[in-house]
Each structure stands twice: as structure tokens, then as C-alpha cells.
Length: 471
Image (tube, rainbow, N blue to C red; front, side, top):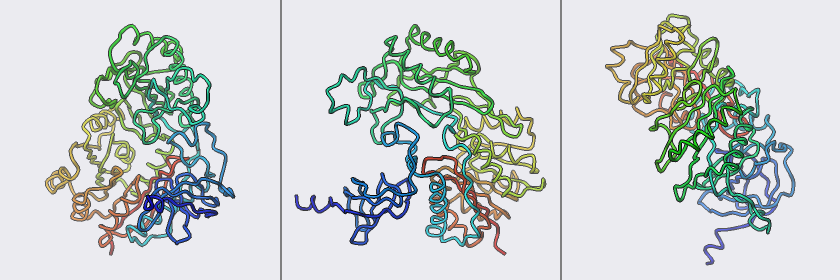
């Protein structure tokens, strides 16, 4: 018992001094150890209750606030603090950008031990709310109850919810009233669907028991004005399904793609499911500099369309193309960057492991009448080999935009073997980017780095660097 007590401590009047990775902030305990906190802003002076003690640090929570930081701002969203998204809504946007920039610089210098040129200031997002083009909401017949609700004697009414998973709780859904992530008519569609489903006694899903009819709803919007809605049902019930889908189509005639899935699996992923088009098209279009990108229910597309355009422009500028170069675009996804740079390159070769993404890339290239791109599917570390280079040519420039885990060490090694004169590395995780840059540091030097904020109100940040061969 005494061991347990010693592990949980209270520190009073502690100043929060910095932001850390994954949205946590940092305070210093009286014994000099770092304390990681999930619910404070740098500049706050707080009491801390610790709940984990490690050799070098504590994890804890601010339980009382003696002084509030001047970096604070009032969160716009009524769901802030309960919802797992938008964790930085209580910090002014200019301070969010400062800490994002600082994290990228720290990762590159501390993890990568990279000598950095003058750092180009982070590019902020014009829209700080309502910037996402895709949202997925879950139905539940047992919504998340707040402590106040549980302790009150009031009748809580129906327990149905349509919203987001509570962090760390796979079976609890926070019922949303107004979400600040996706522009109208997103909130209107979600709230109307929920009200109609309750009124017509359409059963909301129960994850534990695997019962109910309505599982999830996805809404996608685009800068062209297209809107896609996809409802996932747990089982087929033609009468109820058509009742709901007809209601959605009639109430929101601006929807250009209305689709559904019948998914009786234990999980609600749709990638192995048939998506059925009910009304309109089975896709929507996104547009960028006259290029059209066809997006279906399963497509990956950057979730902040306007800021994706800025990211791609930076990537193209960093590549510094003259029209003569053979470019390899690794982890090409649906080929957006490849097509975006194609008109300034001699040829672009895109490689990606997801077959559906490559099918979409080829289709989009055809749609855009781009003749100087080719796309290949396969696991990067296996496809991107000497035979591949011998067949398709020695690239002058490599653009790489890997997933969060960064590049496999074999891929990094192959880039070093090929030794293109320039590599443009786009990353959504500067820690793994730094690790990869360290492996390339003997041969390449970083000549420019630019962070881009794709996700305001969150701690996520993208970073682009130019690597050039050392003399």
C-alpha cells in the first residue's frame, strides 16, 4: 500500500513551461523531473496529481489552476475537453504554430542531429475551424454520459448517440451537437439523420452486443461543392434502409453522392466491403489548379483540401523542376503529388502499396490527360529495387511522402544507392522523418525545411525538407 501511495503525488503551484509531443504539456517537479500533463497550457500555474512515475518523468493531471496562461483562448466548441479531437482549442492559434514549429526543429536537431539551415517559418492555415473534407461518425445506443449526468436525478431520455469515440473507449460514443471540424451542411446532415432515426425507431448500433441497424455515417465535402454521404448498416433491412436514405436524399438535395454499405463484420472498416451507390454518383471530385481528382468512398485524400494545395505547392517548389527531370514519387497514394508536379517534369513514376489507390491514380491521370506519369503497385521495400531502377531509369529527383512510421531502412538504403541529386521528403511525423534524415546525413545535407499546419487546434504538423547531395 505504501508503494502505491508514493507513486501518486501532489505537487502544488507548478508552472507549465513547454509543450511536448502528442499534445501534452510539460511542467517541472520540485525534484527536477519532468511532468507530462494532458490538460494544461504553457504559462499556467497549477496543482498536479501524478498517476504514473517513471525513472525520468511523471505523468499527471492538472487538478487546480492558480494562474491561467496568457496563451490561453476560449475553446469554440461545446464538446471541448470530452471529445478526443481538437485538443489545442484552448491555446491561441499563433502559440499552436510556435509549438508545432518548435517540435519539428527539436526533432530534426535532437533525434536526427541534423544541421539545419535557417528554418522557414511554419505556414499556418487560413481556416482554423471547419477545414476538414471528411468526417466519420458512429451510431451508438449507449452514449457517453458525463459525471454530472450520472450523478443527477434527471431522466436522461434516450441514450442514442451519433458522434465520435471517447478516447480509449471502443464502445462509448460522444453525442455531438455542433462539431467545428467540417463546414455546413455537415452538422445539419448529422443532426437531421439522428433525429429522423430516433423518431422512426431505427436501432442504433451496440458494439458490445453487436446488435442494431445503424453503424456509421461518413460525410465528404469538396471545394467543387460536391457532397458524399455514406451510411453503414449492420444488416440489410430494405424498408428501413430505404426510409432513411430517401429521407437524406429529399432533405439534402445538394448531396451529389449517396451510398451505403451492409457490414455484418465485428469491425466497421469498409475497405473489404462493397459500397453501393443509392443516388447520384459513386464519387465526388476535388480540383486543384485545373486538375481533377475523383474520390470514392474508400479513397485516401488529404483531409484539409486548401492546405493540401499549399503543401503540394511547397513540395513542387522544393523540387525545383525545369521540365527535364525524371521524378520518382514514393508512397504516391492516389498520385496527387505525382500529377501536380508532372507538367514541370519530363516523367514521373509513382509507387504505392495500396492497389485501390494506384487504380485511382491511373484513372485520375487519364481524366486529367496526363501522359508523362506511370504508377506501380507493391510493397515499397520490395518493388523499389535495382531491377525497377534499371527498367524505369535513374531518377534525378525523388519525392517521398511516407506514412507516420517513416521509410523502411531498406528504402532509405536504396535512395542512398541511387544517389539522386535531390530528395524532397514530406512527412506527417517529424520524429520518424528525423530518424530517416540521420541515416542519410553522411551523403545528403538538408538545405531547406518548411513546416505546414494542416490540422489547426491539434498537435499534428507536416514538414517538408530538401536533401541535396553533399559536395
